[in-house]
Length: 134
Image 1 (cartoon, rainbow, N blue to C red):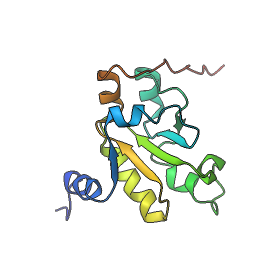
Image 2: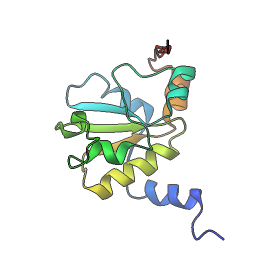
Image 3: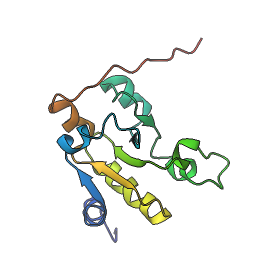
Image 4: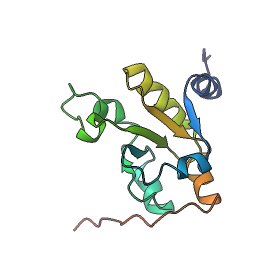
């Protein structure tokens, strides 16, 4: 028997994190002090498309990519920016935003409804280039 289900974890994260509507996130899209972070799986990016300029940081690796002491650290996370995370529906990005806050990253938020809401609102997307293995 689980002590907490996914919905309870997501609800607890929502209560503690900053959430932007798609409209609010759109106002930040081309700001130099904001970095959109896509936590979806690469297959989702290839199938559904991407937000131009978003940095792909898969949820399974993000803790390692954010920590400067990790051998997997990505310099983008050392920049003085606001990080706006998104996934497909907003659940994974909510949990990931909460995790990054727990790690000490302060200027972090996520998009309500995720990439699905983004596309439904007609916000700009582009196809993800599929890299072929030769």
